[in-house]
Length: 569
Image 1 (cartoon, one colour):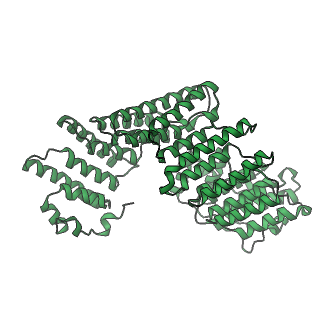
Image 2 (cartoon, helix red, strand yellow):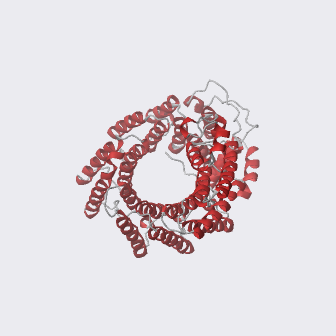
Image 3 (cartoon, one colour):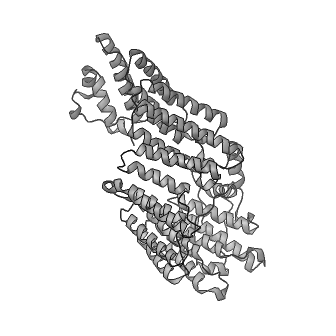
């Protein structure tokens, strides 16, 4: 069972992430403690480093920057005794569940804290007669899910057993989400076979539910196992067979989308070219099921079309650019006609199409097409937003800009450096005007501009302009308080110096060598020397410099100190 992370829940996540010095009580001997016996008292919640709290906030983006400090300070002084309503306890458990999915250590403490929240809620209901705090199946599922996510399957199994067998003692009965929680806990701990066993046992003993089937498909999709597509297809065929016999569970749009994504992600590289044909057959089956009365099937849903575009990128279709444009334009036209948000293209629709266009045609025309699509995406986002409709999944974020800039960088356009820099300037302006982190340029953004400059070919004027842009961009990333140059940055800059600077006579050569040597020394000090950097250095540096640094001018004979490459990832 996946917790819904609302602003209030994120607020509690911060609380759970902070050092809570006021919690000192042990467990009570209430019936709740008998549910999951404890041998040791509750441990103090350890403090989580501030960078981790910052990461949670930036990931979820629900708490504004100016409120971060106040949120943390307030929650540091609160304890589990500050919970009053059913919603308070539920939100606290959801926050702990979220942390259990993203924290790899201190899981015992998360379980202890979750158990205390549950025990307090149970005690207030059973002993203090607060009827509105009776733990329901949903609360038990949250507790079970936390234990399972943390890898404590012994305790999770005890909870599951009681939910299945102890209704006479007042324990609420299990539901389909109870078993989904166990399956997802198995997945998180790398126990895919165990998740499959729970699924098979549940589907034979309990009423069929498409949610359970889709959970198994989702686990296979994320498994990374090349055998998972065949398993997913077989399960989908079982559901299609149920549909023809008017039995449950019948497949829905999500079922098909998960199988298609599983095919795209987990098919071996040698067979990926055939995936698109399989996807087309699945979409045809969807259309047939829809025509036969399955109202939960929509072959025009964005999840389906996006998966088709993604599969198209790996295919051997001859004119995949036209095919991708056809699919995306069809989404746009259908949305304009029906105004169905489920059929509206999102950022992935545009980005995947842009990537297909730019990776299959390096002409300036393709890069221009990508820029046009970015503008269409931005205009569509602004238009829908002005109508008061939530459409953040369509936002032209830094990822979309990076894709278009990469298209320019890989193109043969003589002005690609200027085009990439113009997109960077546009992105920076958006970031400064909105303070929206989704628009914040990242390391890849700057590296892509430098790459466009480094591989510019054309007139001396074109190369001179590309050199100016490259130096300006390199200085910007070096002076940035949040982004540092990496080995790719340095390697591309060295490559650009070699390709762009005049090197016709001895004076020019000395000038290039001096700059290259200076940059390499900075690269070494920052631990960013990689094979790419060394290869570029040996192309552009003087023999005397190479002998002075390495004692040799032949690349194959060089071994560098580990300190020089300590930050290479």
